[in-house]
Image 1 (cartoon, rainbow, N blue to C red):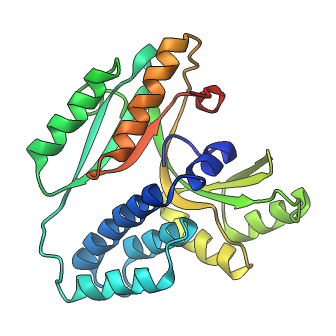
Image 2 (cartoon, helix red, strand yellow):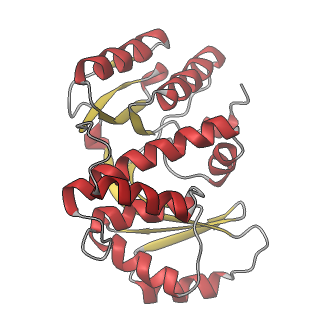
Image 3 (spheres, rainbow, N blue to C red):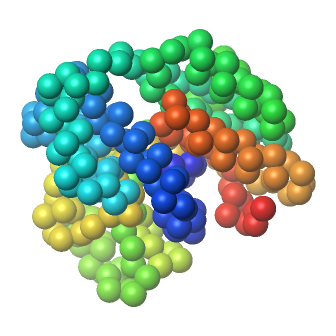
Length: 248
């Protein structure tokens, strides 16, 4: 998903077409397969796999699909060799963008990502040019549109789970923690019966950029959309503050 979790952004992504959902399933499946090959198929002994299973479930990937991907990876059914590459750059108006990729062809991916930046008014920079302005955080988003969770209840459970902070707005609850605590907090919240709209370690920006120029907003929206459509791109993080205000 793009950027820092906002409930309306999450709803927008969950309302995508079946084709787009299939692409999300494929991308998460690729991450799971790589994690299994690196650390085995038991999530209790493979923390990376455990995080990805939580992410898959938050994106409504069926359990049967998850189990099939793990079994296939354990049997070395997918012999492609993937590597993780992170690209950084700027979108229109100086919006900072981090693009996390999983690819079996570094040259193809670098060319595609650079072309997308150039086409929509951005530019790809060097490693570290924007990532210094982001911090890794464990992020859990819970649907509270029916207001079933009071602030007192969330506060009590967040403290008990060992998370750092939470916020409640627009019918959602967002809980954050240190990346190193992610698995423990995940276990605790799941044990309390919570289901998640998002459960993953994200790159969260320290500061945000707000765009006011309509053309810049259009290009920035297209830049994010085209990056996310790229099969090699796993995650796109950015600091565009008012993304949800652009209707397209």
